[in-house]
Image (cartoon, each protein chain N blue to C red):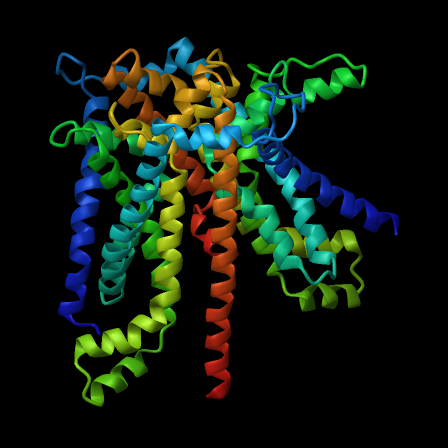
Length: 265
Length: 273
């Protein structure tokens, strides 16, 4: 009995450790006083200050556009690559996977520096260079999400469709793609969150004019913490939470429908 | 599907890898073995043995080591408790334990700074309780705190996945055959969870060792990790050759860690979904 309580307390403490800082930020975002330790009453003024600050909003839009674009491009190239890689001979597959792992294994700071040294030769540092950098580190995630799906896929269905007269494209769209959808979806989603979360690679490849939320907050923290940043943290936390819950709900539906079709067979 | 037509689909990706992964790394290597004047030299690579750089390398390795060990010590019991408990909502609990991973990295450091700073929340509570405030901000302790806080989910995820995947049958069978709890832990659970701990180590040790942001914000710019020195070579001192040389050294340590402890399993994040 005591053991059980102790276990619960331990888990509770770990969760407290992980969430206390985040909760503090959320509470402070509604604090009317600038102080970190005095509660000055409820207010939404930091939120309105945040939304009326053009530099924060610009960074916000840049971050979102960057995440969606880089994840989108990475998903298209990555899906094509995954299809191509599975059709290769075993040795070539291993070579491709080795190269795919390089950005994952390498330290972000080295990836960032390497890209910067290369970009300054032909591409002005700005939005485009950051986009290329994000696509580069996003693609491995997409490929590693789609490859296992492709491996597990029943190729007979595709062949059956071809035998029954479907063209390669038609069979791909109607038979293969629906099967791959969960992998593509989680690949895209992981790529987008990696892009949202990245600081180091963006920092080295961005040049002076562009800011994502991460780099913007980094510059601001060094000048001193403003309450608007609490508001920003709370919004981002809520956003991530909503996306994750949505994914979990739709993800479960997808797996449930797959199970159902298996049972029906 | 084993046709040439399909293999062609990998060409754009192959071109991208060559253009934006291999060539940039070649540039770092080329800069690392040349001097600003243009001649070939080993100076940039040997610069790691300079007292200042050597000191920061040792500090980086030490802080990363402490953070990694602490992450293991915190997450392993969590996984054991979840494994033995019979609650139905294990998935939800796991979701809660890994969710902070998705929070913006810089914001999480900001949150830690709020807690630890001189007139921060921890000190406020300490003085309220009549205790003396602690001065941990701008010390290596604050950096370790930040690293543990930031990277704990990256240890939690592979360790939880690995331990929860151990079939209950095996544990029951060994209990039936007379093994006590300690034996089950020592002979079954720990050996079967080594791969999870391994990828957790890679996922925590590599970013902590190459870190410069946490050290800048929580160390107040006074504590120089190897990452800080490299960053300054590119943003302040502008000696790209020396910076590249130190980066190559860093890469060697990253490779060694990965070879020793196994692959980075970031894609595991997908399992939470």
